[in-house]
Image (cartoon, rainbow, N blue to C red; front, side, top):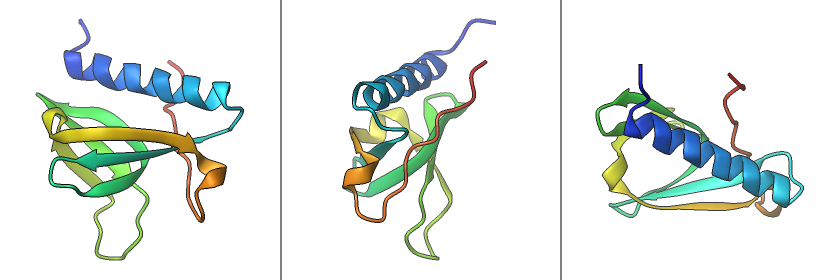
Length: 100
C-alpha cells in the first residue's frame, strides 16, 4: 500500500526534527506549532492519523482543561518552530516515533 501525502508529510517532518536535533547536538528538539487561529502548542509528538487531510498533534499540557491530543487539518498549520529544548524554560522535547 502506498503512503498517503499526509503520511509522507509527517515522515518528512519527523526527519526534519531529527536532523535539527542532530545538527544542534541536542537529544530532543523543542517543537512548537502555530495554527491558523493563532493558537500555539508545544508538541510531544504528531501522527498522520486519521489521515484524509488531518493529523493528530499530542501536546505537552500546560493546563488541566487543555486536551491531550488535537486533530487538525494540515492546511490549518500556520508555522512549525524548532529550537533547542534546553533553551526553553520548563519545556519538554519532541518524541520521534521508533524506527520501523
